[in-house]
Length: 107
Length: 119
Image (tube, rainbow over all chains, first blue to last red; front, side):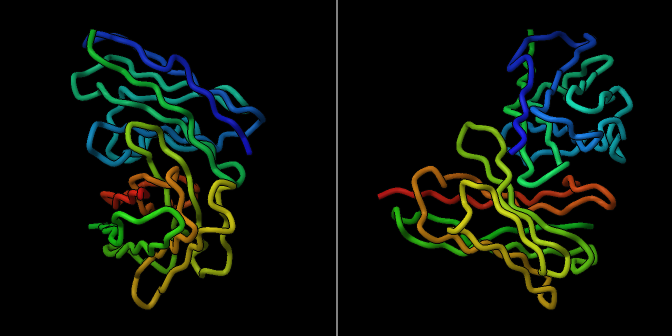
């Protein structure tokens, strides 16, 4: 199975900050990568798919980049509603796998 | 409006069985691959299984292979997960998910149904 790692595992940030979360795959996955946001008590919400395509309805401050093994989720200006946990997921080959998550909380 | 409503969770003893259901509405169920994803309390997301739109093809995580069976009834717009030989490590919130058009990621998730395996 393809192993996904994320860094950092957690960090604190302030509203307005530009933040970046990295996801790495143990082998090449082309652009078959998605990013999800999950808030406590809620189901995950799809933000980005195909590594860089913004899901309909997701604010444009979210962007994704990368291909192969290294990927980045960037939030250009952190808003209060963005404090959450973020997961990457590869859907290049079965079994699909998620990263361990990155928790973003308020500084 | 797309809706995915899971049911069937509960408390079960180790070695026991449960069948989860997911009632889908608001989209053409028979046109989409469907999956189960789980989340242990306080932990991350774990992909469990997928079934093709026709039901002809299935895949499983190694952790559940041979114990869980995914199925669907397109006439009832319902997805199932039969879980046998349950273990404590299967304790989790189980989400039903719908795949996006053109990508095998998930644009809709249910609210989840909690499975607790404990004696």
